[in-house]
Length: 254
Image (cartoon, rainbow, N blue to C red):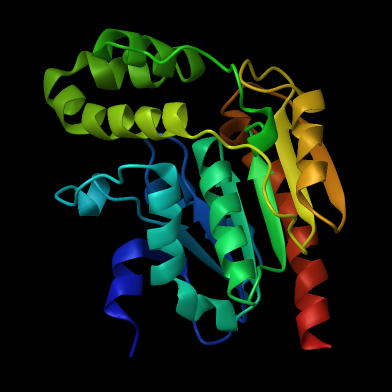
C-alpha cells in the first residue's frame, strides 16, 4: 500500500511495477504537476514519471502555501523519503530547479542521494544575488509572467481564472524572491543542465555555474527558445533525457 502522505505530494503519470528508475519532476513558479503530463509518452516504459504537487494549486487548491522555499524542500523530502529506495533522477525547471536541488541535498544528508539532478532555466544558488527587485503588485507579477509566457495573457484576462491561479503565482514569486541561495554542500551525483538560448532569466554562462554544485560530472545542453523552451523543444529535451535515464538504468541493473 502506498504512503498517503507521499500520494498527496505526487502525481504519477506512469509508475508501474516495472519502473525501477523514477524521474521526479518539479514545476516552475505558479506551475503545477500537470506541466509534465505529456512526458511519459516520450520516455522509456521502464522509467516511472512522477511530478511533485505543490500545495495551493490544482488538486491541492485548499492546502496552505509554504512560507519559504527551504520549508517546501523539507516537506517534499520528508514526504518522498520512501522513493529513495529506488534510483531517482530529479528534474526541475526555473523555481523547480532550486527546489529539486534542495531536495537532492536533503536526500544526500540522509545517505540516499539521487543518481542525477537535472536543472533547467535557473541560476545556481551561488549566482542568485541581485537578480531583480521584488514585484509589489499583482499587475507587476502578471506582466512578468506574461513576459515569459504569452499564452498566460488570455488566462489572466479572465477574472475567474485570474482569481483562481494568481494566489499560487504570488506565493511562488515570494518563495523565489526570499530564497537567498548561496554556497551549498556539494552533491555526489552528476548534474545535467538545460536552458534556452534566448532565456532572459539565465544565460548559458550562468548555467555553467551548476558545475560548482557537484563533485561529479556536469554537462549543459542549450536548446532553441526562451524561458519556456521546454514546451516547443520537448522532443529534443526528452531525447537527451532518455540518454541520461538509460545511463543510470544500466548502472542500477548491472
